[in-house]
Amino acid sequence: MTAGPDLDAVIASIARPDEQARRAARERLSAGAPRGRLDELAAWLAGVQGASPARPIGQVRLLLLTADHGVTEADVSGHAAGDTQSLVRDTLTGSSPLAAVAASVGVSVRPEALSPDTPGARVDQADAMSVDDARAAVLRGVAIVDEEVDGGTDLLVLADVGRGVGTVASALVGILTRRDASVVTSSGAGIDDARWMRRCAVVRDAMRRGRPLLGDHVAVLATIGGPDLATATGILLGAAARRTPVVLDGIATAAAALVAQRMSFRAVDWWLAGHRSPEPAHAIALDRLGLKPALDLGIRREDGTGALLAVPVLRAAAADFAVTDPPPAADPDRPPAPAN
Image (cartoon, rainbow, N blue to C red; front, side, top):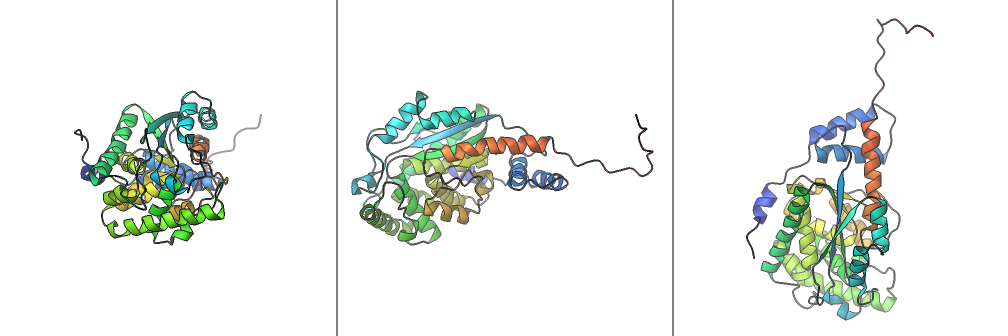
């Protein structure tokens, strides 16, 4: 592994967002007409930016992590082989639905292929990777953030796609929230009863393998995670260390966030749940993280679409907040203005 950031030092450097700026934002907003969730988002932005009112959001980047997982050998995925590569190729050429959504909200996409050749091991039977490789993947995520922030990125959007990633993420959510496999296993699109039972068995067995390692977060990622989930964990920690907000997408990024939260309880305040998908494990993970989704549109697609749609809402919250001022108090000693 090449020289790079030290993970313990990254974690130690994480501080909470600017509470004074967030408090000032709340007080300023409470003086005007209530705007519901927009006020909450504007106050969150003020805190992570350290400025009240919140500044307009500038450069936004979607980090699209892609990896196919070996659990697909158990016929647990509703996605066809080659779907991941097609998504990346079509996104790069601007011909995918994801590319269209990203362009419509002014967000550039950076794909990161983390298993370009073949899927990894079946995590219900064998480790996804070595502990050293898992730590290197976490640090790769930190380095990606450093590149983005140094290049002027103000806001990161994080998504993780690939065949089998939902099954692996569900196992992580299950052991980290102490839920039964049947509770966190999806029965969504493309999943009939027989496939759901196979998926549930894979999640159960993966959870059994990961549960004894809960005291070592990198080891958990090595055992039942994968390079994409480890990289996502590093991105979330690195962003918090660089005081850069992140919008989370679906179940995979929420699972990585649960791991990162256990490594640094302060880091969660830098993240926003872009939306809530119909995946049962997603709602469970967001509840444990204490994150309220910006949107709830029933979007099941795990490619960043839901998180991207939260970006214009954040932009609107910042823009509206910047021009929202309480009316000046009346001065009883000042004579009324003359009539025209």
